[in-house]
Length: 473
Ligand SMILES: Cc1cc2nc3c(=O)[nH]c(=O)nc-3n(C[C@H](O)[C@H](O)[C@H](O)COP(=O)(O)O)c2cc1C
Ligand SMILES: [Mn+2]
Image (cartoon, rainbow, N blue to C red; front, side):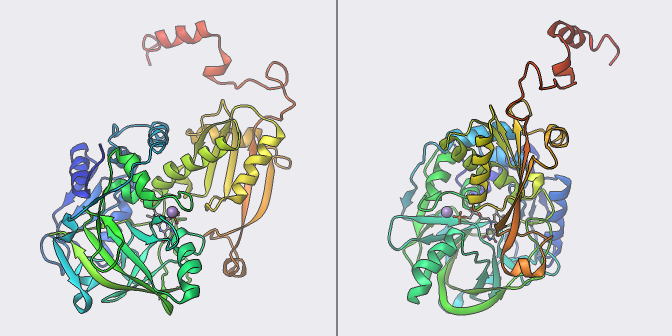
């Protein structure tokens, strides 16, 4: 079963050596961010900062909650050293069976209730995450809840939130994301405020599904339940009808106000850079805050790999794309969206190959709303999870002219774009065909790989393996 709250998850991570309590006082202003950043870059345990400057005892920050595959495996109740492939396969099996959330009357997130004028977002140890960020970010690992007014669709998404003042926030408001889709189509044109709830420090799998692309109309809560193999308990907000995970550490309730405009960003971003642009956002007006006693803020310090967003995408987005490929009849074996690839690289393994298969994968990549920049398609005998093998396939099987397909595309946070391309949301996508030409035959034209696995008869391999120690290795 999944963890009902983040506290049990943190305790489990401490047990496996994947979280560490930091007793020394740290500053919310850059120090907690810098430590969390270094944890991401060194693969260290997730820090739980127990004492934060300017804040009372008990007000804590938990950094890099899912910034490693080990922590993700623990969140899914798998062995911490599970392989990426094993985590992905289990994830794929579980999301086949969505589990609706359970509405409860009360929950720990209601232990404290603050409304109206008393709301002060900086009551919590909101970190200044990276130097040069546009402000203190309260939403870096959280989930934002919005409802489609015309259907039963309740969307959970993870879209960053910057504190503007005591009771207002700015969000990164991409129109193609579901929050943007609902707001720009259903609320803004009618000049209606859009209710929202933000849950900070919910159980890890609820946060994971919020940060993962599901389809328009699909309720992420049902998939969080599927992954946890138990319903997520949700409780009604104080000032609107939205339902938030009852075991969240902090819930912010409010409305997005149309016709308003405040600056948002810059922020260190998932491709591993801080881009200079300030964006604009409508005001996220906070009308109420509810929170647990001794609340734990969560902090994802997005940037140079590997961070929580890279790990989340490499499971959720990879499985989603693999499922779509299967539905369209592509003979896909595995899909890897390696965390090291900052969400820009996808490797697709296929069983058999003709040109139509490559064309179909190409079309599907171009039609997707993912930030993917490079797609490498490899034969089934290449392990997509082994980047050494992928690189070898690219460097030996991808024809520099015929195997490379380049396309104009939209929406990428890519540092190589010119200022003009950036403003006009123009980017590019590259498809690398790293498979043998379809006319080549295994028996004749395809050269065998000169490797231990492929170049020797079985009896020699068995002999060598059996005597390996005896040789003196
Ligand atoms: C740590 C983290 C931070 C993210 N920050 C943002 C963000 O600021 N804005 C955004 O549009 N997407 C962000 N994403 C990606 C979205 O959460 C993701 O695309 C998700 O699918 C959005 O939900 P939706 O598909 O329901 O729109 C982030 C993901 C993670 C894991
Ligand atoms: Mn969604």
